[in-house]
Structure formats: structure tokens, C-alpha cells
Image 1 (cartoon, rainbow over the protein chains, first blue to last red):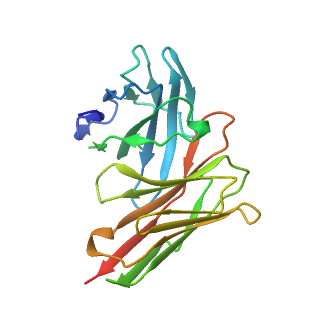
Image 2: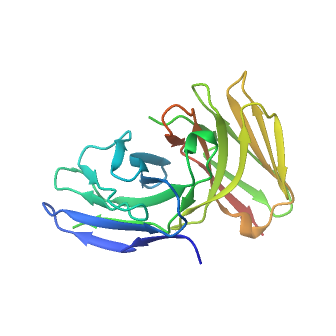
Length: 115
Length: 111
């Protein structure tokens, strides 16, 4: 079945370590997104990509990095520069341009905890 | 920045009653979408309404959009226990493909 797969579902990190969250989609979607969700909060946009080899910063990009080498993959690296990385991370994708009314399809999320 | 603000933050109603959630936003939009999130899961798309539409229905869902007031409402009729979830509105202005979410309304359906 088509969909978005995020891994790992749970991840623990020591302070000072970089970690990479995986996001893979087989929907043939052009645009992909990373959001961060804190308890009781909405989703805040970290990075998004409309096309391979191109991506833009969202509202809270500091301390994060991404790559888009393949259409189906959009990994997110949480670097040691991110001061408060404990959160629930959600990846999403949409066909074509989201600005023309693209429904977002979400993965099941990755919960990162810093020890 | 968060474009949308849902109201109320939390809502508890009896099963069978109707649930209404509101969303206000700040800037002009192309589309407004509503999503649902069960605890600890990803979001699921419910309905999209375009800026030139005023009302839209999908099953037990009814969404309205008032662009003059920059607000939208989501009505769930004849609520069920399975409707217990958080509901988010999301807007896009079309210029840069950013889709911005509000903080959500936590809906709890009491048996």
C-alpha cells in the first residue's frame, strides 16, 4: 500500500549527539514536510521541500538539517545545536504544490527523547 | 509562527451531541484544511475548503469558511466515542507552499 513511513518510532539521544529521522514515501509526491509537535501544542514547520535537491526553512529550522537527494526520501537530522529536541516529529507529503490545495499525508511520527 | 488558532482548546460532550470547533487565522489564504489526530499518531486529512467556498460537507462533518472574519468552523454531528481526538486547522497562502497549523482542539466524547 502507498504511504509514508517514518523510522524509528521511538529514539533516545544523549545530549551532544546528532540523530537522523527517516521519512520515506511511495506516493510519488513532489512536496515533503517536517513538523515538530510539543505536548498540547500544534505543529510547527521545520523544513519543507518542493522538489529534489531543493528545500526551504520553515519557522523553526535552527538546529535541524535536511536533504532531498531522492524524490521519495526526506531525512531530518536533529543536531546538537538544537537546544530542546525532545518532541514528536511528523513527516508529511503532498502531490504537486501544496499552495494549490494539496492534502497532506502524514507518517505515524517519531518520538525523540533526549536523556 | 502559527497562522491558525482553534477554539476551544478542549471540549467534552456527550455521545450523540454535536461538536463545534472554530479556527481563526491572520492572513489571506488560498485554502483551509481540517485534520484529525488520535493520540500519539499522525494526522489524517478530513476536509479542505477553498477561499471561494463558504460551506462544505463530508459525511457527519460540516465546515464553514468566512473570509471576511478570517474564521472557519468544523461541526461534527451525532458524535461517537471514536471521534475522540485532537482536531487541527491548517492554512496555506499559496505563495510559498507553506502549510501552517493551529494548536488544535482536544475533543473528548463521553459515553
